[in-house]
Length: 217
Image (tube, rainbow, N blue to C red):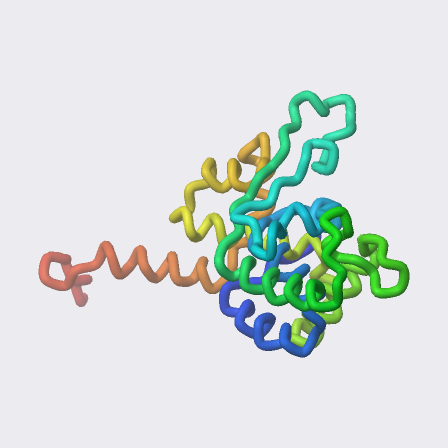
């Protein structure tokens, strides 16, 4: 999914403004992806019991090795389960969603966290991709070809990179990547950040009090 773009910091408020117009399942799917960085097939593999216990959202969510990318390949011994703490935003959306399901008596711990309304089985990747496109379209993201389910993971990577003050190795560890180069490919450079960096260089190095002014011929 190398061609998918992340949601930029100044664009994210538009997404959250659009979310209340969608069902709680779709809201929770989007928000959990944005705040855990799990791949879409990992999110869709989750069961209710992995995030909800005795009426409370768990403090973290763990995806087992078998459900992770490469977890069933010949390299599976090098793959480990991945646990991610749930922040307040993720907990808020999950609590609203699962409380609604609890009222309907649909909280079997073994049930899919994100089921299809038609048959109750877990959403497919195609269905999840359609949900992402629909929500982003409502949020005003016009060029839908740039976005998809992997947008959620790429956005999470951008947010972690900023939160760690651009610590690429810590970001790599959070993402579950083996190589820093993989993490670097996830990071998007905004043209506005490039311009700001160039202007900042001039501001930090120029001081009229101790700088020689150009001579006038």
